[in-house]
Amino acid sequence: MKKKFQNGFFLFGIVVLAIMVTQLNFSEVWKGLQHAGYWFFAVLLLWAFLYIFNTASWYIIIKSQTKGEDKRMVSFGYLYKLSVSGFALNYATPGGLMGGEPYRIMELSPYIGVERATSSVLLFVMTHIFSHFWFWLLSILLFILTQHVSVFMAIMLAICGIFCLTAIWFFFTGYKKGLAVRVMNLLKHIPGIKKWAHKYVENNKERLENIDKQIAALHNQDPKTFISVVLIELSCRICSALEVFFILLVLFPSINYLNCILIISFTTLFANILFFMPLQLGGREGGFLMSISGLGLTTNAGIFVALIVRVRELIWTAIGLLLIKISKSK
Image 1 (spheres, rainbow, N blue to C red):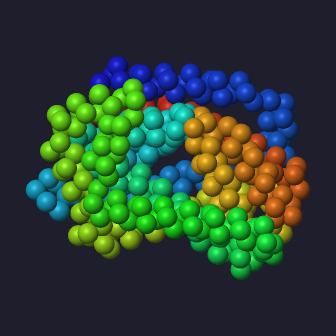
Image 2: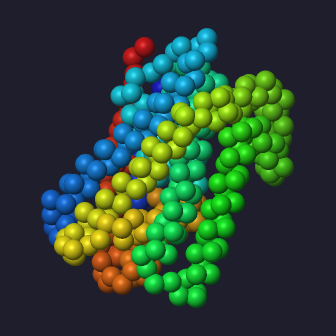
Image 3: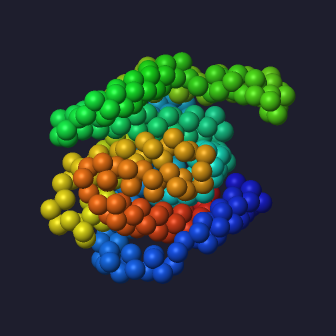
């Protein structure tokens, strides 16, 4: 990637991160960290482990693309760097996919080509989101099996279940036929960018079709690899509940891990509804308060968990932004 683009991503992320930090109540943060003690360091280390899951699924996707004539690959360590930096940019940008994905494609293109870089990033993002819907769907079943379900909650769970099943069907269609052309055709109808989209599709029609072929190939020609990637991402979602588990151990030594899975599931569902907020400000905190209170725990517990998670996000966002400045030598 050219230095000017790299510096642009870095400076944008740093500015947004600085704004996010100014929103913190530092006295409350310090009290929270003192209360969390060594469990806060366990939370930080946990995410170094969780990013390995994300990197592994992306690495497998890129590896599956070497079965043809193009055998170019990149190291696992380099992909880990791009994963952490990509998620840092996603955290800092409204919409979640406005910074991390272009950055990954631009960084990866010199080593495996634009088409493979684009298709691998699109496949990774699709699988990452796809696993979320499966996680939310399985969490609905877990809630029904472990919690008392009122009439109101039954209606809400039914709505969420239908939403997840519809999204899963949409992604299966995307995996079979590809999404690049579909997305660009959609952009052609959006005011402000439709002229650019028309011109881009005309000039890059063959490239977009090749990207879609590579996306469809993983699902249609290599189902074992497709399933393994989805299971890795789903495992990451389940293991991410350890974060809530570690934090709540400070307050409730007998906390149930299954409840932590429900908390992280419904919190991420609520936060992703507010995807347009940088760092999902407000959405994540509100999600923790509602999910933790809904399981019979105290409101203060929800505030405590949200605070520690927010600080962890800021630290890993800072780490990811610093990694942008570390270049890979050819």
